[in-house]
Length: 260
Figure 1: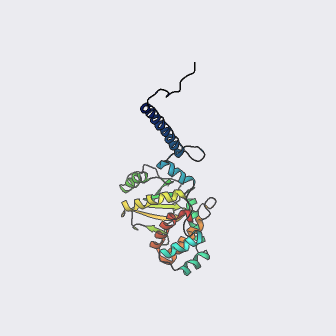
Figure 2 (figure 1 turned 90 degrees about the horizontal axis):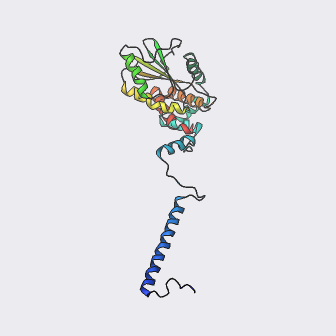
């Protein structure tokens, strides 16, 4: 005995309802397939919207390409931005007038026990406390407060440290009679120095009368080949336009670090 077709003997109304249901089911399946396809890449792997942490990690491993002038052209452009005449800057920079000055800073850093950047020597009452790395403001604050109050620093002074000399030709931000001096040995191409720069700016902002900041060069040339040229460029700016121009130029070099 043969089987009857599914809709044989059904009323036209019932047949229409069954057909409508089947059509809706097919449409739903198709919609699901489209959504799955949209959620996947061309190779079938799932696309995941990156979190803030993932985006930052990607940025760390693959920095964006520089936009605008790079290298020596950048140094010239930034010098003009802080009011230095192009010809005068080029003449100074190309003559390497301040190569010895950078060498002198580096030698002082070595004597002070600096081995990496940023290297900070906090000086008060003739003693020096060494703080290495891009440590946050919150770690500097208790040291500074203790020294200002005449107390022992939570980080003890380094007995073997040779305190850096500070002269009228040094780059200083803050009052000359400040009770605490922070000498920073830094490298314009060092990413940790770039991260540390705002911390030092905050310290000067929070302690305008009590802390001064002295910037010295410590280019790690084996891993940062553009650190020395940037240092020499900054010295040309200081020589041609003064201390304030140096600090403005330093800010700009760190802000454009990927283009050095």
